Length: 409
Image (tube, rainbow, N blue to C red):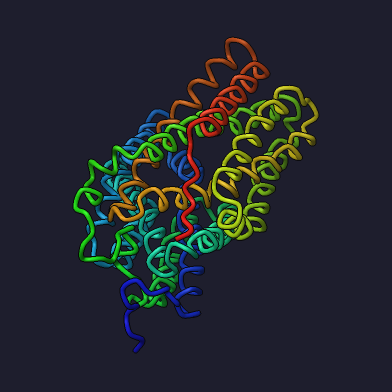
């Protein structure tokens, strides 16, 4: 049995652990896909009203927002990130089975609550396992690899579950989700626990003389780069979250017959770019620094919003989604990477992820409401222009106030 990594040494995770993490992320993306739009479709077939369906979705969204920071704190307090991740996956699998077997109001509400709570710890747990395995100098490339397998999992799961829903029934989607939890847990078991540096997974310095002030939660909350970055991410999501739903409505109005195919293409194009580009993003982040890539993501989002405002051809709108792929590839790597930079030495890496995750949720929640109101009042072109303006504001904030966080020592 391999010995645990020595304090301060450069981690050398085995190929088995690396592959185990790859496939864990792939299958986990499959499992989580089952709780996307398929929930509304399935509950509609069970004669649920739109009010009841909306209530279930809102419960999950609210818990997911409020649980970000507690979820990160739980992962920071845990001595085994693998155990936390395993319990969360098992909980999600049971929630999927409850949806399939007992689609009655109290059971579905309980299942939605458990799914949201479990999801709050899964993101931090994956980032913590990654950081504990490879260390802070290799984490950029590892996060890029994570994003690639998550994207591949999302794409394959959407195809699989769409086929099951069409050929079998919408109930089968949740049975498949439950079954997919099994290979997810098997992949997790392939990650060798002794290769995960627990202190490093929490962003702690492995030193006996570390300053207690720098490891306090209040010190972390006073970190200016973390607060600026959280504000930038909030602006990013405020501009980004509503763009695809708003564009889907425009496409449906202009070309209703081909709308489902075009919207599917708008989802597949960014996923393909994320799968192809994410590992390169991780490497470039270490070579170039974090700020240039972050500015690229905000710039691409602003350009995407402006193009949506002026382009009328539905097929050209699909091509514009290339910019969505750029922003998704960059942000999927940059968010945990910059948080790891800022929280380095604090021992609260996962709590810091929860802070940024809360900002993400607030921005995404407000985005659809804001864009919907502007679109209904002034038209979709003005709405897209407004979203582009918010992205430009975020770009300005990052340009003027966000310091470079890459560590070279």
